[in-house]
Image (cartoon, rainbow, N blue to C red):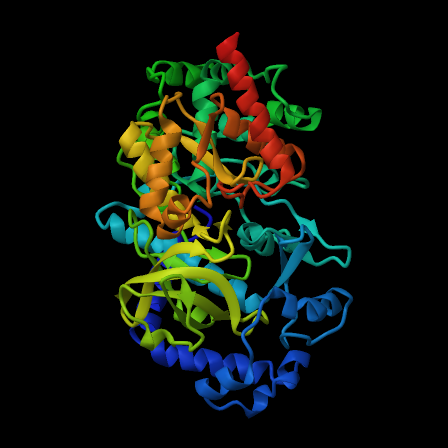
Length: 558
């Protein structure tokens, strides 16, 4: 074991206990420190940080902000100018998609990286130890199967950049010093020069390593996709393992084929062991059978991605899940409240300064609350001041306070304010959409169905058009329309007034959503931080699923 995970985990939990027990004081100290350190930056001078002596003055003097407010400063940073947003220079630029399709570059400083490492990365290991108090560290922390990949990507000026979920590994390896000895794949696979589809490669390494104790990802859907691949290509993978070959049909470049032959020579004994496991067609308990020492799985799931949580349960039985974080490109600012505790994230007082705008009946109140003023059961739009130069930044995420950990709120993510369907001013949000679909699957028995939806104005009035990857259900549209009416008063009112036509459903063939993800990857989309598609906002995505539905129709008539 190259990293001392027990010590890292214990230190993280000690910090978590200390900071959350005094969260209100820590929050004041965080704000004072951020303002003091950055008073002489261009942004700090503009809003007179040096003259701010209280939270109230901060809120009066510094406006609420969005990314557009920072673009001029970030462009100057990228051009080489100093001290624009923070006195400390960024060590990374998180790249995220903008509403217009133009990439957004979000600076990340060393301080934010260190919070990420100490409190979140380390916190996971601490919570795993706490969950298994009687298990030896050597049995908890063996080999990790990391299903993501974190290419060393840089801007023209040499600055590290990429998706935020990859930032920690890239930063830890900024001088080539990250030791990947605890992972089941070589460092070259974990941190490739370029992003490629290495699903086959990772599957081969994972199957070759019987000592895997953890499977890591950002989202559980990546874990499911990897396990799906193993189940669907079981015979091919074991044949290649036994012979030390790579099937000609596998889409790997010659470089990786040659490297794999060197890394993984023929191993007929391991292949025979695996073949004897009796893997069932649906993969039930497959992960437990392949890796009997598997202790936990890391990845975001919960109520917003129920089909992937269910799939992990099918593959891994009772292996517990740590649901990782609630965060965004603008900040990794929380950690799941424990192992097997979904949809409950502790906001870390040391991550920055938090403010909360109350939300009631979909309306946001502009008077902010601090961490010590929020109430259990209430919803708030999150406003965040981080260590990397975002001040009073509207995350546009609505969170519900479900509990407290010491003085720190424990929250669940409800919905993003701008992610809505809106045909006739009903403004249906993603939480209502998921609630309607959950009710639909319970009523129809289509558990595990994948779905996406778009606004469809080809009819008058407009309607919602759903694409479902599931066994065709003859009355699906009527049932789904009723579930939408019950989930959203706005939708029901518009339906009753005739402003929205009944919802429509088109079924797509099995594997359509996997093909969609593969197509995105083929276009260069970085999939490690990809969230499963829900709302189709662009013509390419809409055309893709329309074509899949046409194919399904052709299969039925043929």
